[in-house]
Length: 327
Image 1 (spheres, rainbow, N blue to C red):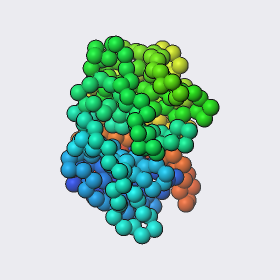
Image 2: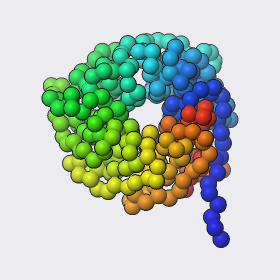
Image 3: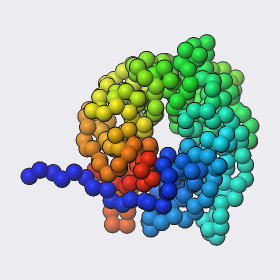
């Protein structure tokens, strides 16, 4: 008997413009999303309803992240990154507590991580330059700027960036960057001296890198591009482990599930593709969206009152967010 294709479990519909980004946070009790009108929505996952909804930016909002459980970072194309205080007890409107100016020429979404008790964000702050910078939100100061080397001009703009999870005793930050010329690079920054080292670089993609995702636990990196290739690299030396090709070009987002068994992509063709980490073989194609899928994210804890649910969420140019229960 032929297996029926997976169906979306729920559709979030409150956005009125292209939905650029979504993230689970606070043990998957909430979702944060943002759109091309600059609107940010925080959803209560249990009820699937908006808890906060506000105009965070005068132009498109590229990404949103939550840290310390109640502080939300919104990255706008209005040349500003805002920090908002969320009050879950009173549910009053989020309060702006800090703003950081930057040059938002390109569409590179920032990366956030915790390093030795401080919250750091990494992004391309000089939009027309290939350099990447790290800002310390805890001390509200630049930690390190102009990450790159003499070959950066050849790489052109930074299109995607990720700070890898920091190991507590490690003296370095490891940073993945994908560039306009198709290169993927692993940089290493010394926490004490601020010295920058190029660990490895790979030139597999012939077109700009649109997304990348690395996992310290799994020991590998994935990258997607305007082309139809998705490449898996060894995290330590950058050697290509395997390459898979989608039927359609344009992979705009990547997500790896916490158990390192499956990963997912969002594509220009409106499809969400789910793959096996071990074999890189496709497991499912999820079809709902009528336009490009911009972002995918897995829940971390997966728990439901009636058992385990492996949630995957996706945003689209069609103004909607889809929720899927996968494997």
